[in-house]
Length: 423
Image (cartoon, rainbow, N blue to C red; front, side):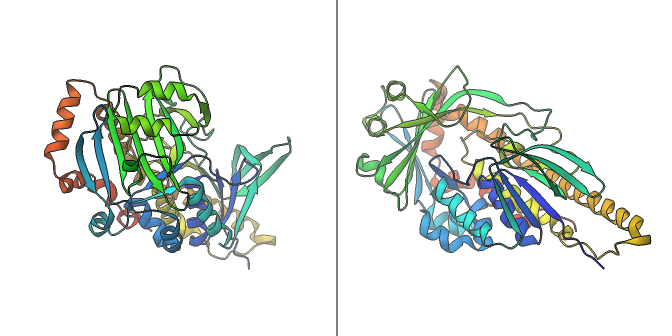
């Protein structure tokens, strides 16, 4: 008797891929995590983990390490960029934790990647394949064969029951009917030493400054002694890459007419990295057969809702929940006259996994489409010019913090338990 354990290949070891590998392993799968870099390390700066994401990570046993590495800001304070006028304050801290049962956190991307990687390494049945890229997938009755390309030109093959593509917006396994589209904006990021930042910026809040055709976000990062800064400005020429060097004069010029605090913050940044902002129109179909995308590979979202990492973490939870019943198939007789029976059982197992992947995609589609659309609406509101900016400012000023927070209940109040998984 032999009960072969199903295995899942996950391509891409970013936040989404690491979370998927962790949760699939916890569900009982053997997991191969494929990463084209020679080691798993995350570039970039900070990211925001709203309650819809933090509750998943806490539920996976990462609450203690998150509490040591992340900050729970007290509020989002929205100001007008030109004169620094306060427009609105959205409560976070204990208010949002009480409202949604999980905290709103900010953390350095590398810190989150590190703690996820530690958890993955501690999970049984996970194999890390560094320096290899998933180039092609061939399906057969027993599952798939993934062609791997090494950094020195080596070629190898990996057998698995399915492939989860978590390689980002430019993934070769992204939906074929929806190509990346340029937003017309470029994001600039920097880490500013806390000692060099303006005093107002060093407080425990997420600062959001709005202006014509540009906006600025900042918040402190724990244990790093730095302030994470992201500035988004118009850019007519899209360029490849998300970590190219940015010229200080360009970003300073874009905010030259703003209030003193944002100008001082920008001037205090030792260096800048920038990347062109892309998303996609919602795809009619995410995956095919035994291949499914996850995170930005499925539904890239502009950063005007701070949900890129959060939605990828949600994807991982829903995917693992749908696949969990297939993690340990019934034992089957192997050999001799039972070969045909074995083949039929393997084919049935592949069909079951394929259906589970389509269920995952179906359960995620409406929510991710709404998030993509809301992010684009925020882009227009954040960067509004007069007179629309005046309307925006009046709406913000007249709403209470609780009213503004309630607008995000659909987003922050989501939990994986709400998924309509049918086993």
